[in-house]
Image (cartoon, rainbow, N blue to C red):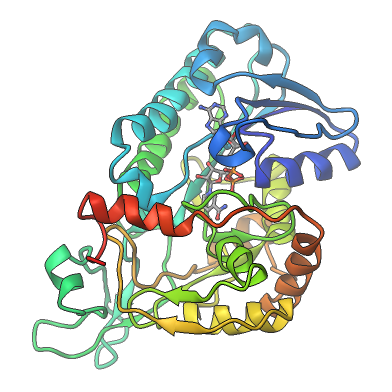
Length: 374
Ligand SMILES: NC(=O)c1ccc[n+]([C@@H]2O[C@H](COP(=O)([O-])OP(=O)(O)OC[C@H]3O[C@@H](n4cnc5c(N)ncnc54)[C@H](O)[C@@H]3O)[C@@H](O)[C@H]2O)c1
């Protein structure tokens, strides 16, 4: 098959491209080499045998011939920083939503259209995800995002109206969209655009909602996203690691090899029309446990402290229900966190060290009152 990947020079695009080429597919990578990901003077290596076109995804509308005769498209090009999206609103909407619109229009102009369009969506569309009251575990509730006032008061966890703690449970795909950030809203919009336009063009849309993807090849210089690379980069330079909130917030970390397996399966799987599919490990890990595991895997010893700081737009917990992924994609994650972190650290140690910019990113949020005061 001939397969196009927008955002194909990014973390997930590169890993997928290599796997597809190993399987004998021809691959076209479309990417503008965004400086936030690739640095001001990008030095990238295009995988041997892949075709690369440096182009903003919003400009593919003028180059529909790129997709002529392509069998499937993976749409990854996006801005991905949750906190940053809360003040670079127009830019996030432009790249993520207009980029998707431009892609769909380019596909509409093709004579020989791809048969499948696979979108990298995100668990962020769920906002806080699914919870249950342990006294009534069968009833799923979906709390609204925490307000700046709740965060300022240190009310990290959710409670029932009568003050009983709610517990996070695996989030299924059929709960409502509840985006708590502009990034999340733009991913939900991408889903809606693709679901509404692709079938009319004879293209099957497949929506995959990733949890936190990590592993070898992820950007080590983007201070706006990627908790594992941010912590690693600091630890490697002897800088202390600060945990937001009470350090007990959790994420579902999924290794890149497992995500690639899910993405490859999505190329040919029989997926019901309009279905969305979670891809994650299905296991929550607190940020404190993550920091400990990462330091132990990296061999770097730096102080870890819980700061009580917070960022507006961050969720508290969310982890995937993998029922659909298992059923439709035969998805079965193989790389556990300890093993994945060892692999990530071994790779990252061999990469250049980048100046830590996470404090600058936090200062930008504080300036805009999108994070706790200093
Ligand atoms: N990594 C995760 O944890 C995660 C989680 C959920 C969803 N996703 C989604 O997966 C996709 C890929 O993520 P990733 O981790 O590989 O990110 P990444 O930042 O490593 O890669 C994104 C790529 O898109 C390119 N890009 C950015 N703006 C562009 C534009 N205007 N035109 C063309 N290319 C542009 C960048 O140069 C980069 O190479 C994104 O859509 C993201 O929203 C990722």
